[in-house]
Image (cartoon, rainbow, N blue to C red; front, side):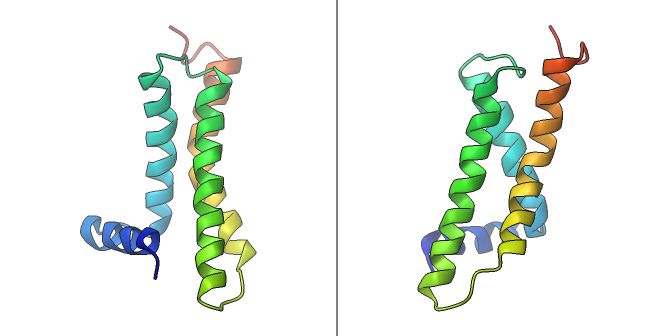
Length: 104
C-alpha cells in the first residue's frame, strides 16, 4: 500500500468519515483555499481548475496504486470520486459566475 493510500485510510479512521465525505471536503478546501490564498474571486476559472487538477491527480494516483497491486481498475469508482470532489465547488463557482448570490 502506498503512502497516499495509507494517509487516506488514516484520515478515514481518525475522522470517522466515509471516503465520499473526504472527497467532498477536499474539493471544498481546495476550491475555497486556492481562491483565498491567491485572493481570487470564486467566479475566476483558476480555483475550479485547481480543484479539478487535484481531483484528477488523486484518481490517477489511485489508478497507479490499483495497477501496482495487480487489481483491475474500477472506472465507476474513479468517476464517482471525481464527481464527489467536484460537485459543490462547481456549484459555488457557477453561482458566483452567473448569479449575484456570491458577488461582493
